[in-house]
Image 1 (cartoon, protein in one colour):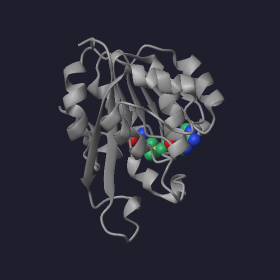
Image 2 (cartoon, protein in one colour):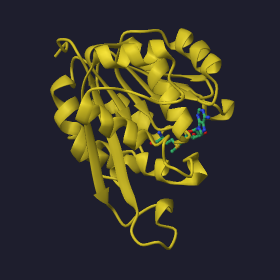
Image 3 (cartoon, protein in one colour):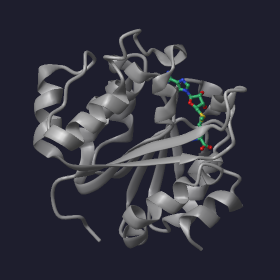
Image 4 (cartoon, helix red, strand yellow):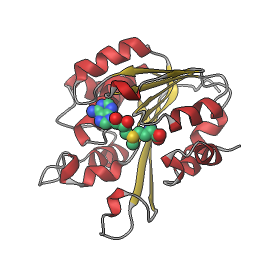
Length: 221
Ligand SMILES: C[S@@+](CC[C@H](N)C(=O)[O-])C[C@H]1O[C@@H](n2cnc3c(N)ncnc32)[C@H](O)[C@@H]1O
């Protein structure tokens, strides 16, 4: 079963966004080699269960700020952590540990949360590993922290990296910038109009937008 079908089997919202179709090229070749996967944003656990099904040899970790969302089941272990605060992410990170083959940010979707989460967890991605940021469309809305001049857009940060190979954002420490510039190999952005989701809000069809960042190094496939 491919990833898109697996998301559908577990009623994971990622299926509606067609994220499985996009991720397959990056994750399919790693199906058996992925040992440790982390997703930030647990909700009802649908995507964690889908990952558990898709990666037969992986331990699956979830982080959510809501303790009631956190659960333990099969190879799945969840921890409490809040993307608003780097210190809270640091504590959850310590509980999860390092050597992460795949990290997915599907949490609060606010710009500052997405940037802090990237800065905190990218160093723990294994060489050649994958870091995914979902629902970037949220970053186009002041509701999710976009400044009036658009200068803090994470989409802008990622497309600037694609064009110039540099990272800059107010939520990144100089050491984060240095690390990302030195270790991000490539950034791939998926964009699709889906006709689904809250982002539509009467303004026409919604956008599905996600980024896949690949770390430099030889992947363990
Ligand atoms: C879109 S849902 C996750 C869906 C899940 N990944 C799936 O595909 O089935 C977002 C989750 O992020 C969590 N969340 C919201 N704000 C957060 C924050 N500041 N820190 C950590 N988690 C947060 C919510 O509690 C919610 O469970």
